[in-house]
Image 1 (cartoon, rainbow, N blue to C red):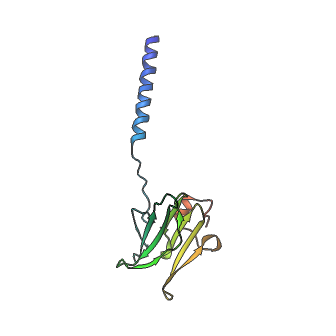
Image 2 (cartoon, helix red, strand yellow):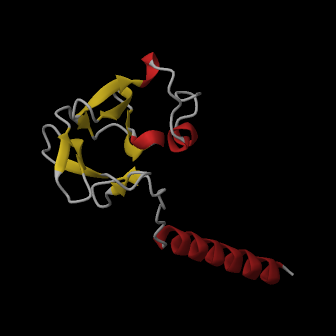
Image 3 (cartoon, one colour):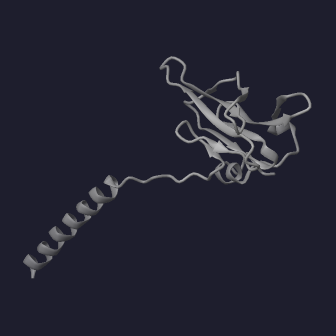
Length: 147
């Protein structure tokens, strides 16, 4: 009886270790919504008129990301001068009405709206606006994006 219990315990522990090894070795790809842009994957605006491209500087002293907006012919319409520290969680994405949204765990949430008559993109602070945040930001940081 004792040999049977020992055998089952050993078998159980071996299977447990094998399961842990197999699950830890699996690559878990995070699938991002189409509106979210990354360094590896630009995002097309909801209207299809613009592309959001993320640029990265991996300098160890000051690693940052910023974005630029391209038109359908790949002409640069806007380049962000502001830099977002990548040591903090940062999301770049499109929202309703072709707004560009940036959430930075360091500095907050911002959005940019196209003002075609002025040929510029205007920056807004989410906390000082009544514009609702995109669904993705509400899902990722619900306490910070309640509208």
